[in-house]
Image (cartoon, rainbow, N blue to C red; front, top):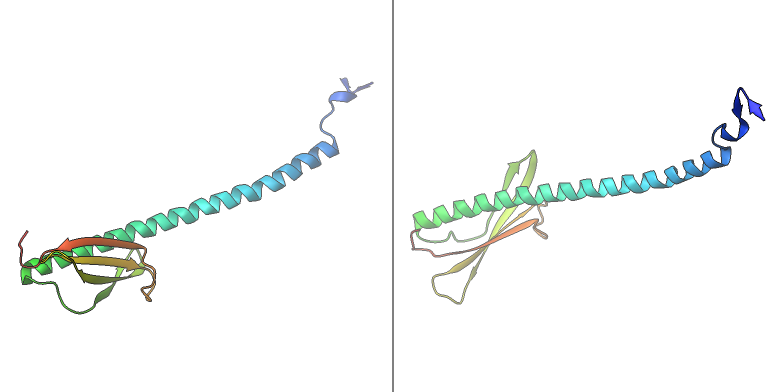
Length: 133
């Protein structure tokens, strides 16, 4: 049978075929969007860790300069707040004596939260007060 010069067999997709294709697309798109949003969240986390690393490095450099100038590690709790990348970052420095005389372990920790419970980045170094670099 000819319709407008063409056979009826090649007239296009059936409604069932279109509905099956639509169902496949409808299930694939949310899965793709979920994967995309997971990637974006991972990128944000990596960005935050990188910025926290920069802040920790800056604080450690400042501490090393203070130790070189004063000849001692500042006493007491060292903590502060830094604004970088349009966000507030909270940092604190923990000191710990080591088994080696003259060496002090220093941990600089950076977080986005004020509570200081879970740092995004921790930088550890050993300083020797009284020894000039």
